[in-house]
Image 1 (tube, helix red, strand yellow):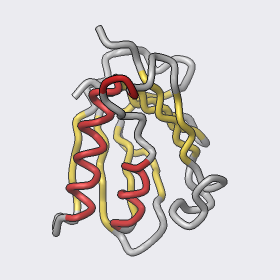
Image 2 (cartoon, helix red, strand yellow; image 1 turned 30 degrees about the vertical axis):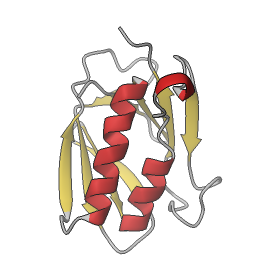
Image 3 (cartoon, rainbow, N blue to C red; image 1 turned 90 degrees about the vertical axis):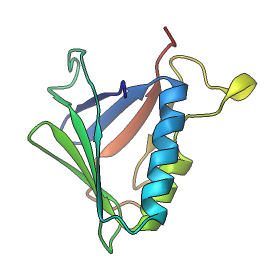
Image 4 (cartoon, rainbow, N blue to C red; image 1 turned 180 degrees about the vertical axis):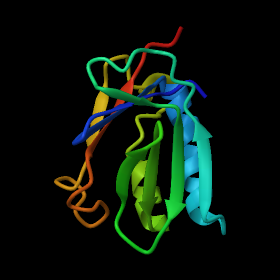
Amino acid sequence: MKIDARYAEREIDISATAAVFAVLEERLRAFAESEQLAMLIEADCQSSPEPYPYRARRLLLRKRAQLLHVHCEDEQLIFEGCPAAFIAMANHMPSAEGEDSPGAGYHIHFDNVGAPETIAEDCPCMVFCVLEDI
């Protein structure tokens, strides 16, 4: 799955086409509703991390009985949280299809300020950015 995942200490940028976000949304929901405790998603990030200092090659989802928290380790973003937190994250994906599909450049911020009941206070801000379909 072509996802550009880049990060700095306080911000995570996840960029993909609306179609890829739709697949990611589906996987997040399936994971949240399953008995699985962890799931790995290859990010296939080929671009430079600029303007961020780092890029991630994998997204690791882990279920924990807590608010959503994200940290970085060995070129992977580790998302840990309760099933409801992964559903909330899926609900924030810019993934509409057809006429409602968000255009390139559209982005959504997902952080503790907007979702304190779901995201840990010390969690970096996540920015989901839509890339142009090629």
